[in-house]
Image (cartoon, rainbow, N blue to C red; front, side, top):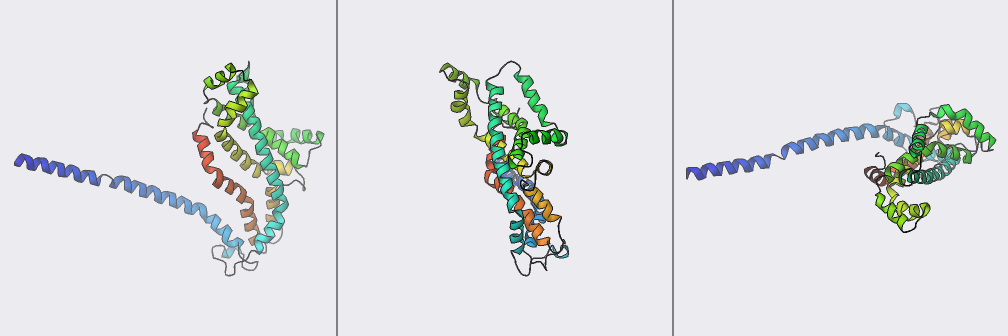
Length: 296
């Protein structure tokens, strides 16, 4: 009986210890959740100020009352912001959408050739592509302006699209090249044996599995083109200015107290497209990263 009692106590002690073991992971999860929640709150504080101020009237909008909710909710600030930014929003859509699509298409073709249809000197060409990523915008601004002037594209939306596409080719090529390396070479060889050429192999074998890389590239390029300010100011003109330039002009004109609500609404309006892109396509962006789009 004493032996059975001893065994029973051991079993009971082991069972109790097993039940108490999850307490530590629960505490760690709670601490982790609290830390993340604190970061979220800190991050959302400026957004809260933007939102509540944008819905205040002209008389109520003032930095001294930035934390208080509006007494009378008004959309006058949003209406004024839309009227001021609408031309810039249209230009930004033209630049970001067309530029990101062209950059992704060219990057896909370059990455395919450099990874699966190699030629003598392919590594040197890829190194030159990578070198283009580290050239600062300021270093090419004057030659780029001269080239666009010679092409009669200076101060136009098409000129800004061309500048962004050329400057985006290196990063797009890197993303697609590193993604296509993960595709088994046996698939390419099988296509060659079946008589498929370079373009046929790309269209039938490589392109159908390129969605993750396209998601990463499109989101990356769309965000960088939408947020661009330097190219827009140096190479653009009033007719081709994107929303970033329009936003800067709105924030820098007039009395601050009078246009404070419009400035907050303008900032939100200018940032909504990129926010929506990440909310709608963020999961595809993460899938692309996990699939190896940025591995190398």
